[in-house]
Amino acid sequence: MSRRSGLDVVVIGAGVVGAATALTLAAAGLRVGIVEAHEPAPWRADAPDLRVYAFAPDSSALLERLRLWHDIRGARTQPYRNMRVWDAAGGGELRFDADAVGREALGHIVEHGLLVDRLWQRVRADARIEVHCPDKLLALEQDETGVSLALQGGARLHARFALGADGAVSRVRDQLGIESDAHDYGQRGVVAYVSTELPHEQTAWQRFLPSGPLAFLPCADGRSSIVWTLSNDEAERVLALPDDGFCRELTRAFDARLGDVLEVSARAAFPLRRQLAKTMLLGRVALVGDAAHAVHPLAGQGVNLGLRDVSALDDSVREALQRGIDPFSPHRMQRWARARYSENAMAAYGFEAINRVFSNDALLPTLLRGHALGIAGRLPPLTRFLWKRAAGV
Ligand SMILES: Cc1cc2nc3c(=O)[nH]c(=O)nc-3n(C[C@H](O)[C@H](O)[C@H](O)COP(=O)(O)OP(=O)(O)OC[C@H]3O[C@@H](n4cnc5c(N)ncnc54)[C@H](O)[C@@H]3O)c2cc1C
Image (cartoon, rainbow, N blue to C red; front, side, top):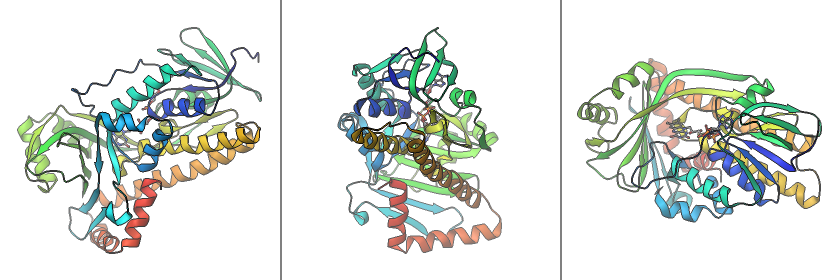
């Protein structure tokens, strides 16, 4: 294979995870190429993005290291100080409070569009990053020294290593022939902004219903962003309801915990699937983010897991560069891939088990889960432990 373009790494796909990957590797001193299919739309403050994330502290720490978090936080984010999790069938409540874990906030609610916008402003300004956008990966070949990529626009790129960050329907994963362990939940996450009679109290709320979890996430403008897990048919039905009917059903589903739901924005729904690539590494190509693992959104960990792939890679690359050794040596990358696979698999199957136990109105699971939440809620060391796992701290 001929070596031509002098790139160290090519990142295919530059959503939140891919763009963060490119920036961290460039900050470590590597020459990075990006291939992204779609020109990112600029974020607009007057048009809130329906896709929002409960951003964990370690995700904001990664953006802090890239000196981006301050700007993102100032543009529009909402810290959440508390979490409340309870089951529609009764029993106890799981409570997490920032004070109890000695922090200002448990995390921040951030719009996807704002993250992409700020990451891309930095990508465009970084002289170490070569951008191919809009363009698409068509084919990929590799040997023991590097990777060669053919793009739809006709360009050919060569690099020592490549990273597939091209989302759940990953062309990179396909090209490598990596299979996924996949399960379609037959559910969709209905998302919207709602205003409620009572203030959100800077609290992330989650009620488990037999149909699946319903989350209300607090937003900076006083509204809440909802993620309502429903079967495909039910999701279609509620999407088609008139606003007042939707608000009434949502109030009921949420047990009026924030009083009546008064108004709802435009709505959207996304399909829920567990999909775990059987390996995150093949030769000189690795997968990160949703290309490697798509998980149930009940714990709000999708994007956080992807950014943990990036942080771990960043640590490994920097350590190798400091020691003057190949940051992408097979041994080093295998260690990264094994560690990340095991955390991602635990999350994917763990969320699935929780979803199974809670999205269920059989008698035994119903009796057990209320007690389980009640017991967990009464054990502060356990809630602290659970929160630390979710927060990556
Ligand atoms: C409506 C919606 C709501 C969601 N809500 C939540 C939530 O509340 N909480 C949560 O944790 N997760 C949520 N998710 C999931 C979350 O968005 C993903 O976990 C996260 O975006 C994964 O980031 P990523 O960068 O790995 O992949 P993506 O965001 O999918 O980015 C992949 C990028 O690759 C590009 N691409 C694809 N193919 C190619 C190719 N061949 N060549 C070049 N580029 C390519 C795409 O254009 C895209 O920019 C939601 C998803 C959707 C759709």
